[in-house]
Image 1 (cartoon, helix red, strand yellow):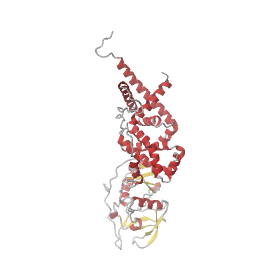
Image 2 (tube, each protein chain N blue to C red):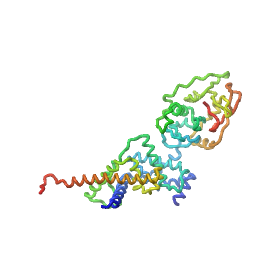
Image 3 (spheres, each protein chain N blue to C red):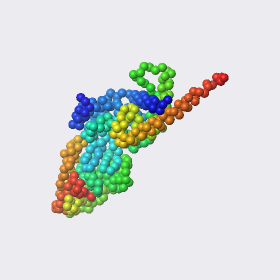
Image 4 (tube, chains in turn green, yellow):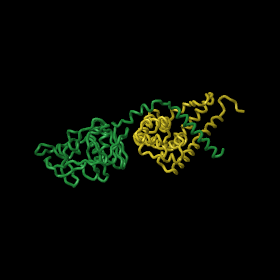
Length: 227
Length: 197
């Protein structure tokens, strides 16, 4: 048998084989019915990419150049607040609740191996997190300091340490940084979309929590971040 | 309504248009996933995930690339992601027993046995190939994509697609050739108890 004929026979046989195997899968009538409710489902996880939050189904926690996924963002916490975290030269703005950010800190900053290439890991909330720091208080009794170690709302200081747009070091009021949480994922996404590309300016205070000493931009890559 | 119009409507958020696309391509995606992963439930999950990603990424779809290769690219990415998360490979052996051909007339017992044997041989031969070679074969001979479309679906250069197609066919041919030789040798042996004159 010539080689061409042999190849044609093999191709025919492959087609026949694949068709036979594929036909073993029963026809599904309700694919759309199963798929349809998921089209609007965005509560599982989100992707934070260059400061933009997008929904993504069942993505693992993994890291790639220019792409960053968070999982599993809990329904009630995922969209709770806005927080700017700039990672050095990457210029990546992450928007997340304190709980989620604590995970980010743990997995991205405290685990340098993650930055070396794709990696997977199950992220379990509040598991193995460092203990929340004890903050000093100012004359008004407000706690102040960095909230990077915060693992919940209760462990975020009243005044969050930050650097203003002009390099001035100061503090942000917690309520300015963390807005009232959205009630639904859709509301969170709508809020996110409405702010896409916009910058929200909030005052930068001295440690007394009263004197305004500068401005802090939320949503800007070029500005600054709580630290 | 043609596919380009459907896609255009999908891009503006028209779910009914997307439904038509799912109905058009759903079975192909499910069955392709099944051929690639060899597990029914997993194939269902991965095909659903592929459609979800397609819906959410429909804005990035470029008409000139063709919807089917684009969809296959999403599917193969889903499968690759799943492999990275899970491993090890599940071989599609469970279906070789199933030989239903609804459009064909009912084959006789001898033909059924022969086809079952050939199916088993092919499944065994495919299992010897690297996974990505098998994917190329599925995309070429089941999904019927052209070489440029496979290149798009797998994000490989066309030359790579051609060489892997060639090498996988060559490898299959050798494995199947050996199987045929062994089968012939067995058939040449005289049945027990008979006289050889």
